[in-house]
Image (tube, rainbow, N blue to C red):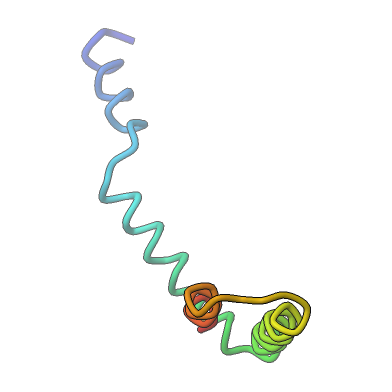
Length: 73
């Protein structure tokens, strides 16, 4: 393998922003689809009940409540 082909091989293995954003977009899409399945909805309900249980057991500020609400889809 000559130096030119080594340089090309290194460039192909180099991470790029485009690949990162494509992967991130695919992940977000998969999570959005998964959240609409029966199992995903059960997980969301479980998170919601956990948040409500925490509210009963400790004082949660408005800022914390808003954060918890934004994590639910």
